[in-house]
Image (cartoon, rainbow, N blue to C red; front, side, top):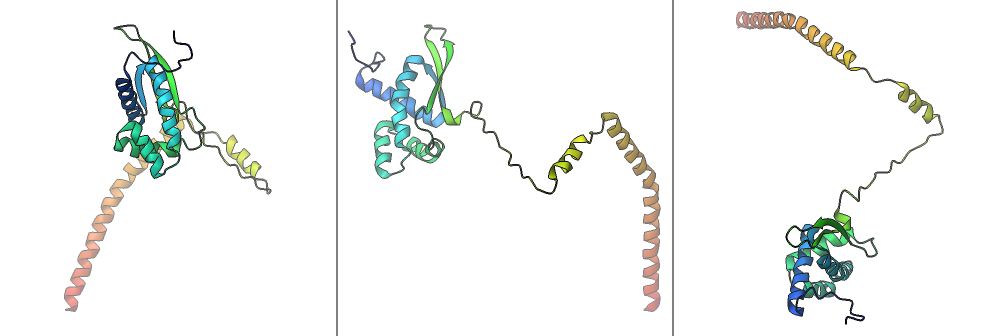
Length: 196
């Protein structure tokens, strides 16, 4: 009987289980979300959340403690550099388990475990507008701008067609201006020759 035994052994001996959880924790910190079975995800959550809490205090002692669990320098560096500042204001609950169905081979219940603060779908930060109110009737000015209607598509196309017609009409005049400019250049060179 398993009276009062909280930990799931995951059908492994202690060394194998410790290596499994360490590798899964490294993958979770590196990729921010991984797919696994429900049983492994629940065991991983218990394993990794104290490490995330420990990473909030960036000291040599806490880095060595976390390294003793993870055994990967790059992952420890990423944890303290990238993950810890994002979870600094959160008091626990750093991971989320989302069930994704059943595996085809053995019908095991699958899930996705992820770091809560790195999911852009759930944690969309809404930019709050800071409105400034003036005492000199600022609302009236905004009310007049709201009543202005946007031009319709036909009006926009008509104005574009008129602009194109004007450009086409102006093109011959630019050629004559170029001819006049070249003739004045020739006159000025002839004058210089006479002066010499």
